[in-house]
Length: 135
Image 1 (cartoon, rainbow, N blue to C red):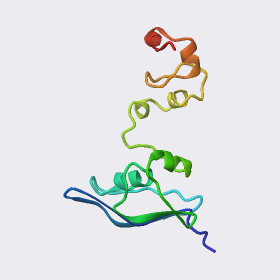
Image 2 (cartoon, one colour):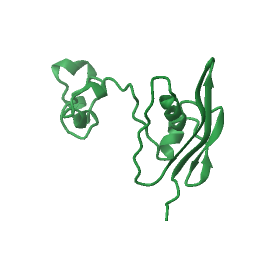
Image 3 (cartoon, rainbow, N blue to C red):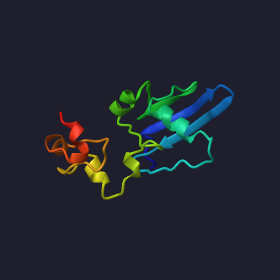
Image 4 (cartoon, one colour):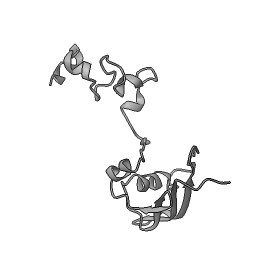
């Protein structure tokens, strides 16, 4: 038996001046599924995900979680519903090497590899390059 969707987007439409970014888009996600949105530049992939994350409001359509309509007006609303987003343009964090990433996200007690993200240890013992970061 098919499990019901945990997330559904139904008839999502978003138009910007002169551009129809999403035209009655339907999407559903079931527990343990992994999806990839593919399309040419300007196809509306980022717009659709921005609607799901509360960065944009759809002009029409609805979002359902576990079969119930939800309103997502901000990223805070999305996060409270358990929805996260990894942005397409997440510099400088995404430009680091794979071995640097765990440090950047604070899982290591060492100094952060990124000048933009401080770990607790880097605030206590700033390096010469981050001496201006003292709290």
